[in-house]
Image: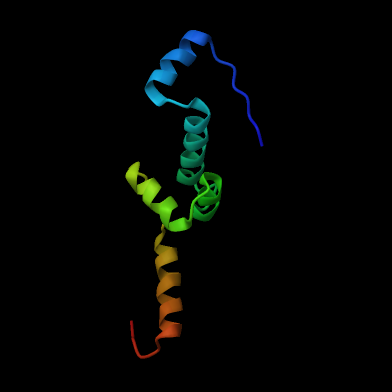
Length: 90
């Protein structure tokens, strides 16, 4: 998908000095905000960036973005692990 954004030339020049390639910066900003709001998963974010999930997690961490991991996610992971390793009790 292609998205076009019209901005004044002087604003474009100032933004390019700060961010470099604006189309990449806009794509990254959209990916970050979508992930932060819980609209996309880290897997979808990874696909948007053209990297694997581990690299996407590292990419987010490098930008100070916390993982979307809820207490419910933790409970589900603990339950899954308990099923795999029944000898370990809660």
